[in-house]
Structure formats: structure tokens, C-alpha cells
Image: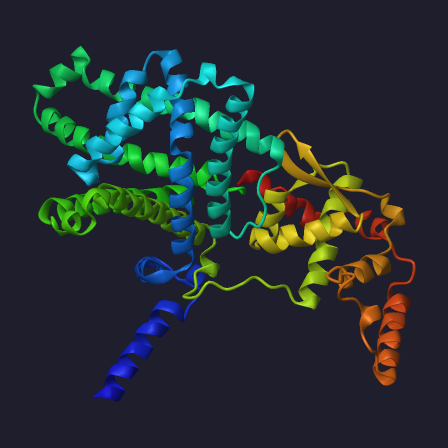
Length: 457
């Protein structure tokens, strides 16, 4: 009996995790994908890295929610739509039931008491810094999901974050207002009296909140991570996260309505505890949706356990040469400079090892990072004729050494030292005086066609 159960679980595990998702087609691909998403979702809920990120965001949100809403409220007040601020906030806290109304009133009171005009220049700077710090923390959490180990540049962070803070609320209220205006037009009212259009519009109006939530999550997944996110991947993650968020909100509201024990246990702190739990669930769902979007875009990294991306010495050397070749080729042939996102797409690797290798080449003085119209791109720092392939590989091999741990500190055995000297001499003899210019000067027709592929995505 026990052997039969073990065999069944072994077959199930092979069915779900045994194949590369990219090689599957038809119903089996979708079934395996859904099974993996469900298993990973349960795993994260039971305790995973996303749990820690969600908890961290709850803490940061508590510290920054009032400054963030104060800045947004000031912008909305300038457009004359600040009166809609409170209903939208209440909708976000609807799962808290009557407590949501109380929390909304308190937050609105706090926000209205923030007098930006009397804060002074230092106060305004601190207010904006608090908002930027919150958005930076959010970006870091999404970057973790997308295997990105670096934030946007400081100038990009300030411009993008302020754009989200200042323009985002206006767009949200504009979308909500436009939807309400369309439903209240004379043509819409006439269609309501005609069947089946009336029933369709009635059910459609019920779906509008779900659609807006899914669309909002989709836009978050596109713009927040510091990498190129395909619309299909973001839409899939946004749809699943949006539906999950609505279902969780309904279940949370039912729990509060049917249970009064939490009030007896926590007394006056119950409302705070419920708010923390709901914020945690909301952030966790948002991060899980981003993880799903990542798996849709990169299905080969959909594994049961999150694996650290560690480059072997062989892969690091080849990746360094390939990056130098691609960047040097475009530079020599006067083509568009390679951006970070285009390199990641072309090499079909996670962003973290690519950026780590690029940082090594920048630190060694072979590449320079430029800001090409808001896009992070790379160019050779030296003349291609002066970049020796032998020196390049030697610098890459020694890049992880430091003053605390270097080859000079190692007590070398004579026989081992002799072998290493012979290996270095053999590499020097094999490469000779070859330079990067000698590699890139010949036109590669296959590469010419492949280079255009990232531009078409």
C-alpha cells in the first residue's frame, strides 16, 4: 500500500516537474503550468522568500502611507477630484468591513492635516524622500522576483517614481470617471432598455471593478521591475493576481463578519491587526502575480525550489567574451548600442548574472555604461585594437579577488604553481596578440539577423 502511494506521488512529481515547459504543447502544457503555479503558490503561502518581502513591504507601507497619500491628495486637489479620494481608499479596505470605514476616516484625517505649505523646504524634501523610499522598496521586491540585482539609476528613480506618484492617481480617477460617464450617457441608457444588451451591460458593469484591478496589476508588473516585461506575461500575472485578490478580499470579509473572537483577544488593537494582515495578503498576492508573470516569460526557470544563479568559471569567461563581442560588434559597425534588456533577451539568461558580468567589465575598464534616452546601454571604453583577449580573460578570472582574499595570500604548492604558470602561458600562446577588433571586424550574417530580434519584441 505504502509503495503504491509512493509510486503514485513519484509519477505525479515527474508529470509536473519532469519536463521543460517550453517543450510541451497543447492541453498538457497548460495543465502542467497551472499545476506548477498552484504548487508554488501553496509553497509561498506556507513560507518562502516572497513572504519575507511582503512582510517588509507592510512595514514600509505603514511608515510611508500617509506621506504618499498626502502627495497624491495634493495633486488630486489641484485637479478638483480629491473628493473621490476617500471612496477609492474605502474600496481598497472593503474586506475589513466596518473597520475599513474607520481606518479610511483616520487616514483621510491624517492626510488632510498634512499641510504641505507649512512644512518648509526641508519638510517637503523629507516628504518626497519618504515616498521615493517606499517606491524604491517596492521596486527592489519586484526586482528580486525577476532576478534583477540592481535598481534604476538615481535620476531614473526620481523621475519615474514622481511620475507614478503625481500622474498615477490622476489616470486612475480619469479611468474610473470615464467608465462612469460612458455608463451614464443617453446611448448607454437606451441600450439598457433593449435586451440582451441590457443584461450584458448590467453584468459588464459588475465586471468593471475586476477588470480595473487586473489592468492595474498588469501595469504594475510592466513598469515597476527594472527590466523588460512582455505584455502577455504581465497580463497573465495581472489577471491571476487580480482574481486572487478579489477572492481573498471576499473570504477575508466573510471571516471578519462571521467571527468576533479577534476583538475579544486583541481588544482595541484588533483593527490594527486586521489592517496588517490585509496589507500582508495584498502584497503577497501582488508579488505572487509578478512571480507568475516571470514564469510565463521565462518558463525554463519555473522550478520547485528557487535556485541561486551562480556562474561557473567557464560560463563566466564565455559570457564575458560574448558580451564584449556583441557590444564591440555593434560599436565597430555603427549599430544601435546594446541595452541591458536587449542583451538579456538575446542571451536568454536571467538579468542578474548578465548585470553582474557587465559590472565586472565596467569595473575592469573595458565597458562604460551610458544613459541612452532613459535606457541603460553599454559601449566599449577603450579602442577595440587595445583590448587584448588574453588580458580580458585574465581580468575576468581575477575579478572576484580582493585585498582580503587574493592569489598573493595563497600559500602555493610548487607543483601546483608550475602547472598554473604553464596553463597561463598556453592561453597566452593560443591567443597571442589577438584583440577584440580582430573578432568583430568581419561581418557575421547570422548575427546580423539575430541582432534585429530583440528590437522586434
